[in-house]
Image 1 (cartoon, rainbow, N blue to C red):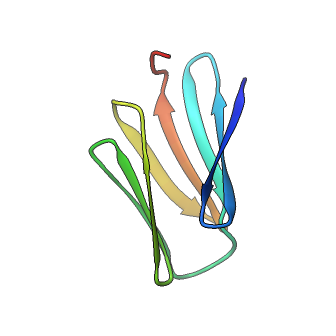
Image 2 (tube, one colour; image 1 turned 60 degrees about the vertical axis):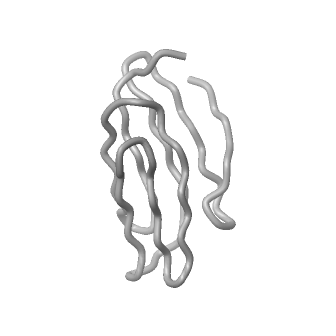
Image 3 (tube, one colour; image 1 turned 90 degrees about the vertical axis):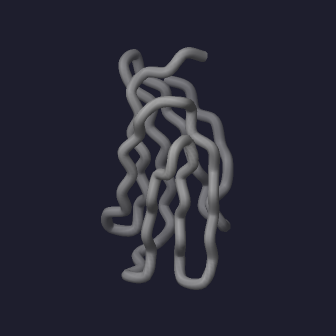
Length: 79
């Protein structure tokens, strides 16, 4: 597994690469006013009045926020 870092607001977005999947995760805090959508190859995170976009590798992704943690799961992608 490798770990590379970006930011979603003040929260570090960590990238974990496994043999069969890539997972992006960020602890954005417990908030009822947070959503995430994947549109084409872009994840769009809205927290309160702030919006954060970040590019995803080509291919399908599943994104959700649970207990204040943003998670984006993707199948293995070419590096």
